[in-house]
Image 1 (cartoon, rainbow, N blue to C red):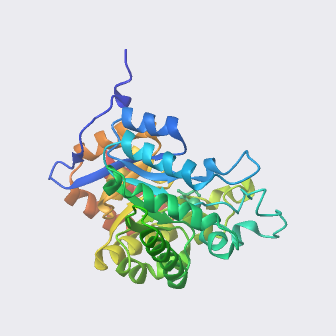
Image 2: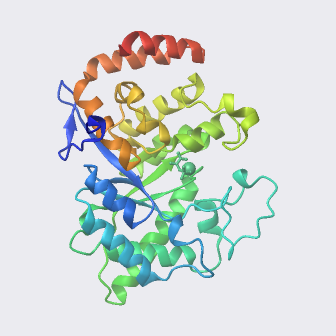
Image 3: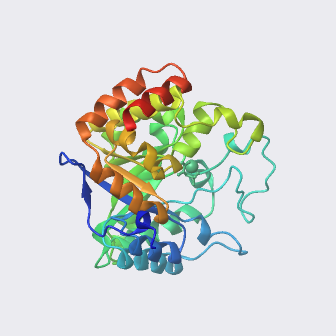
Length: 324
Ligand code: PEP
Ligand code: MG
């Protein structure tokens, strides 16, 4: 018999008491985009662009990137959130980084590398994105910056984007400025989420890195695996304060870390106030099904109780009591 849990639900879903939750997909490449569409994703919540940059000797050019982003916009209906290049950390870019940082996860990665790079790596990607935003499906494009820690970094990235848009316009090239957001994946960003939200359309919680940085536990080090729990009280509180700050700043708040794809925590995440959940394509149907079955006000009460927990065991106990 067919596994009913992966039967796609093609339409958007709401909770039983009518709160709509966007369920999107995380993708890295054309096949993933097609899979996301087939699985009934409402859009792309995280388009990882790293795949375009690895396994080659030179970065992809503007036209190649433009076509990739335009094709993704044409393949899925709904919003497509493209994340600018997020290399560094455990994934050094061979033609830009020598891999000699002592603490690469605390080093030049994500937006830090994009802003520091003296070449046209970041500019080329932004030009391609601004052009893709002006194509027939371009209204659905959104762009987000990874590894933001400060308001200054966001301001610098936005300045570059607007300067490039002005250059394109001056040169007579069609372009449009897309919806903008940042990933919240450093404690620093969670602490200034109100300031970030005031400047942006959305925030997206990257719980994989946020857990690593809140807990000061390398996401790839088995010896500290026990600390890498996004359902630990410190991480849950960072998530809760981010959602609150985002909404106060009139930004919508999503989550694109692995946690968002676990249907066992969908109720908790909806209760915490998330507006969007982005998961691997295969997980989308089960998350949608779970959203349809839950009650948003009961979920909010559950989230309040879970946020009161002091330990992981208490989190689990409170969660298990309510999710039956
Ligand atoms: C995250 O950090 O949660 C995230 C979604 O980004 P990545 O896993 O690509 O670092
Ligand atoms: Mg990350």
